[in-house]
Every structure is written in structure tokens, then in C-alpha cells.
Amino acid sequence: MKIDFSHLTQILQRFKAKPYKIYPVLTPHTGKIIEFKIKEGEEVRGPSGKWLEKPGTPLFILEREKNPKLIRAQYNGIAQNIRTDLLNRFVEAGEKVLEIKHPLSQEEIISEVLLNALLVIRAPETARYILSPELGKRLEKEGLGKVSVKEGDELLIMTFMKRETPIFLKERGTYIIYQIYFKPFELVQAGEPLLGLCPVEDLPHLEKIIQRIKAEWSL
Image (tube, rainbow, N blue to C red):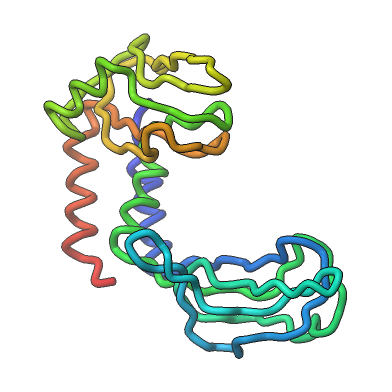
């Protein structure tokens, strides 16, 4: 795998033109929307605190079988396209009620660029994962961005229902472990990223792009 740097340039240009993401807020289940807690254009906040113990801004109340449930914001941003036409109406699960326009931070933009640039190893199943013992020791000693792996190397161990399954690198070539997206033994949903690998020959160019983002991006 080679990094498509022209594609990364297009991504950066898109972010410069629109430095935000739109997150839809959907109904988690069927019910009736009985009250909106925010107005169009109002700023909202997602969960905060070291352990995300502070809940997000209240958005609306969804009642199901006379049991009201307060739906809160999961992201910081501006509330927009609020469906006030849904007030006092029955809605199905998955109905879009409003959107949150979330301004992207420098860190989030770098994360988006890396997800598009790196070879991303994703969870094959919903399970718990750990680094292979050998890889874990090397990373602890050398650190991210320093440890190389090649085709056939054991990267991870998937643990599920007392069953352990090793995960090996299947791509040809030599890669640098650049990102770790999970915490050991925490449940990871199928399809979520686990590791981000950079082709060793592309590492200097990728790091120049990251440094450019840090220098130029003022968000």
C-alpha cells in the first residue's frame, strides 16, 4: 500500500473550505417528541470532564409509553435544522430531529487525515483486543512512530468468549505503527479502527504534512 498524497491534499482543501462536520441527531427509539430544549442556532456542548461525567446539553424530550427520555448532545457545536414540525408527533426510531454543526479542531483534522492516509487495521468482530506481547514490548520501549512490522507479523490478539485469536499483518511491505485507536481489553465494535500503519517509505512525507497542519491550522 502506498499513501495517496494527492487525495490527502484534496481532503485538506475540503476542510479549509468547510472546517466543520455535520452530526445528525436521531431518535434512539420510537416515541413522541413532547418538548424541544434548544432553539435554532443555539450553541450546545457534548459530554465533558475527565471521565465524560458531565452530560451534554439537553436537546429534546422523547416520550415512550408515558416515560419521558431526555436526549442530550454528544458533540459541541451549533444546533441547526431543528424539526419543530415533529413536536407532539409520533416518530420512528432513527428519525433525524436536528443537526449539530461541529467546528473541527486541529487535532480532529489530523485524526481525519490519518484515517484516510494510513493502512487502518479494523476490528473483524465485536470483541476485546490487546497488542501481541512482542509488539507491546517493542512499543513500550521505542514508542509510536518507531516500531516497524512486516507481512506475517502478529499485531493483535482478539479475545472473545474465552477464545483468543491472533491477528496478523496481511499487507505486503514494511510499515510503521503510527496510531493506536483502542484501549486494552475494552470492548471494540466490529469495523472500528484498532491500529494505523504507515508505509515506512512514506513516513517522512506524512510527518511533513502533519507538521504543516499544526503550523497553518488555527482552529
